[in-house]
Length: 227
Image (cartoon, rainbow, N blue to C red; front, side, top):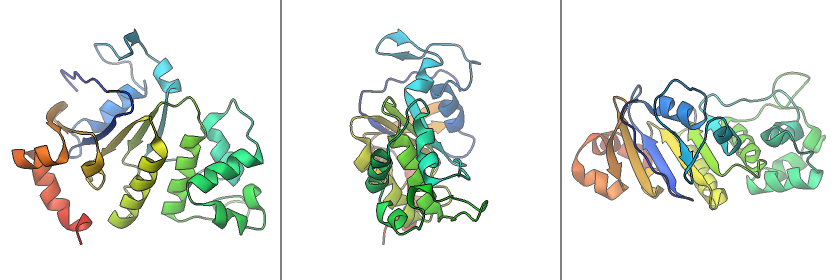
């Protein structure tokens, strides 16, 4: 990562794309304050931040945790300082489209997930929705960072998950980081990373006309998303 100069507007939805090794994950680590090995400054509304950025952010990573615990506890981990009521947990499940499924389980919110203690295993898409409910549980997270969150989903399921995230994000800043482009058309701005720098920047239509890295990636993936 070198010479990065980026300003993100409140409520902006950004697509961060690029081939493997282009610098996307390093960028994620900087945003989540997971590394201090950099020169420069991160600021929020002109105030310098470091680890405080972690308290303003929630994330779903490619290998997001599938916690072997109850549905209730899986969601409550999104904001540990708070003791969640059943009503709050049901509300989050309803928002992510899992309420009816959980209602049909004999132990409801106390159903164990995973393969331990006779737990119920979920599909990848259902685990994704649990992870999104965990995002919703943190009322202070003004930034959602999604780093390759749909890598194990087929393109149609990927679009479904991204549509759900868009619908729930509200005025939060959302950064979709991926080498797959299913969500990029809807982004306010697309940033194309290459060799540690932002090589291209603009809307979907703008970048297609440039015939650069983004246009090449989109043409290679177009059949995944166009019937």
